[in-house]
Image (cartoon, rainbow, N blue to C red; front, side, top):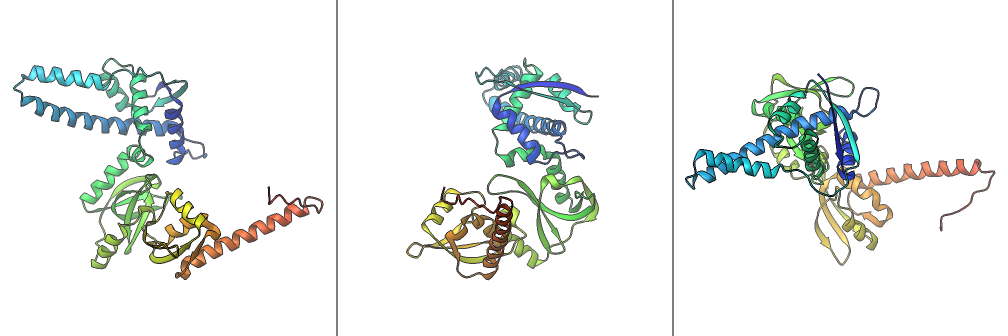
Length: 345
């Protein structure tokens, strides 16, 4: 059973939804985006989450009203009136000129029918969905990802509670069985990650990569004392870098580097000590995080005491230099031996 829905949305909401389709990797086998599946999962999961929040709110409200010795009828009337206020029509003047069209598929149709039968409170289904989408678009990206992949997160949590492994398929349809540790947000609020344990290693994996996720019949892999100590240390760093070795390094900044460090906050490692006279910043962080972050600093930094990080940056810029050098020669040879130098423009 498929049913067509149309919702008019503001610019912000409409393009947040379309962007998340690609950010969370909703693609068909032919490589085209699968907007329909994304919207169905979003509505199904967000509706369930909202229902739980409403039920919790109503229970708390009823408990509070009972303290005033109100009758059950009066309590129900007040509760229903407040719920109607919370779901009142959107009368904002923000332009809703972007039409979103999609099908409710048979797998998720229950959520749509439940909304229409029990939760509209004098709204049309389009108005209800617009409020739902608007609410979703105001959340941070990792919060939105938790909504879209709520089913997967609940399954992971159940496996952890039952001391079981999980099985998922990678992009090559290989079945992989691992011990789940938990689901964690990145500190920059961009993505959420499953941290799993396998052969005494902790590995981060984007939730959207968990294809055909299910709970295994096999008992989880146990952590020894060394594993537990390592995990406690790793959980202090950003989830996406948990498999990277933590290093202690001093880096000398130029004046421009200090400005860049203040300005760029995504994946920024925290300095635990700063020598202001010498402009030396000390870091204790995963080497991959340091490498990825400081790539954009170029010649504005100097790594003082870690050869591994120095080599990573050195070989990256060396290969980049050779690539640009080859490209420059090709441009020169293809332009009748004349090369205009615009480097000072």
